[in-house]
Length: 209
Image (cartoon, rainbow, N blue to C red; front, side, top):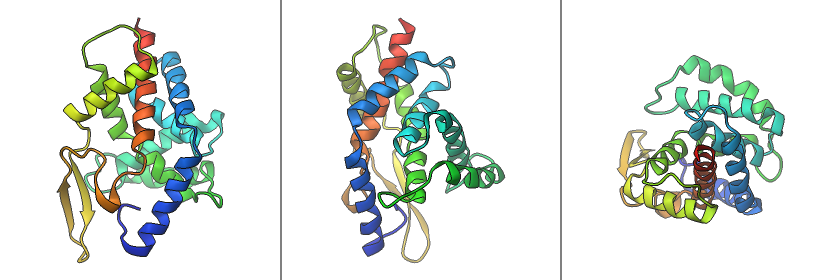
């Protein structure tokens, strides 16, 4: 969606926005907190917990959510501008991910996968940033949200956005001070991202206590 403009962009964005409106975002925060508190791998949890919960939110079964998260991670690392992973592994992951993330009239499979990919490194970096803030006592979700917003403003995980111009040239856009962008391409999942991050942070802080 972020690579398009005009009527095509508006249609795709509207579908994403309608889908996000159907989600019980507070319940997703509770789910992220529970999954994080039970995670056996604290180092990997900032990446895998939000992805797993997002996978469940877009319709992947609970038993397949972990696998979908791993596949989405492989795709995110191996595709797109500045990718640092294995492109071959990313390509191999796509067919299985499509099988797990099946679209319907509310949101097609490509957009569901797009939501998963947007829940990868940026959310994980924000979780880690929030966890470095002073304090070790357990947090409720309200406290965790405040911590996440502070971390987001002080150390935004995404400082530049990549866009293609009409002539096909790839350019970077400074979004400092606007961590979710602005204008017609502003991220529609701001509340969702903050809630997934807050739930993960709260769960990990509780597990540490």
